[in-house]
Image (cartoon, rainbow, N blue to C red; front, side):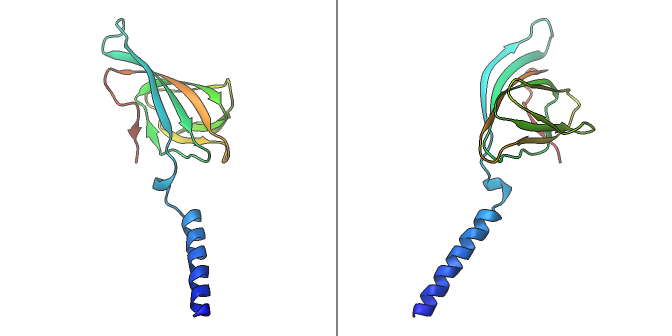
Length: 137
């Protein structure tokens, strides 16, 4: 009986460690996106400006995507790693900026820290009503 209880306890601990270390990315904490404002750009027919904040939790790694917009990024807190297809990977800290054009494929978007969140502002110039991000396979 004692051997069975001991083996069950060891098995439960091992399973817990495996689940923690190998949890699928879908269980990872998600980025938090808050819309600050959206305005129609009357001198650019069919276009709008949108301003958002994005918070990456510690260790966050985003999926490959594109914006179909001009995207201007300004880091408020922490540091982030960004890369578009054909460009270098860049680590950005507080006060640094980044730009993506409508044709760019965003390959890398992640928090540079596994222990601290990172937050940045994004200003987008895009087609009116179009989604902010478009997944890329």
